[in-house]
Length: 115
Length: 109
Image 1 (cartoon, rainbow over the protein chains, first blue to last red):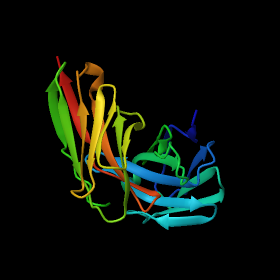
Image 2: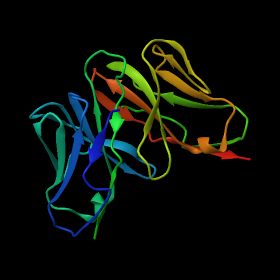
Image 3: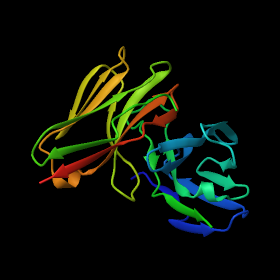
């Protein structure tokens, strides 16, 4: 069973804090993603990684950075949290191998509130 | 995003059939996925199309026309538990997934 695990389900942080969201997958997937989901806006891609230490910006990377030091772990960093970063954050992973299971698998989400 | 468009909200009656449409930008296309998401939960995978035509999976079917940049998800014999958001996602260039804003489906008795 594919497992994508996010470190926290709910998080409350103060404005200006540095925030780390962690994501671990156990399927040896090459690709990992961070999205945020807001009402009416759907899932928006923040960052994408296709290999260890490799990353690409998504549609809304401003205010965020990422780290992928090991294949199974992809971290999202909010350098200085702001109230407009209050959102649901979803991590996902997928295989780049041309096999049957090519869909993206999601973690349970982290609801972050910045006060 | 990649201009993935789907209706914001739909309402249908229990036992009926509903079709949710999705249009997308075709350049770099490498697969179309449908996900179901209940409120407060993560999206779960429903179906995958990479070639033209219809894929059937029980009560759910998904159709793809690559030349038109068009897909639909068909839900038959609607049940109350089908009330959820349905997300259309397109994989581009073999790795990046982009999502539409989702269609909230309300199933009424």
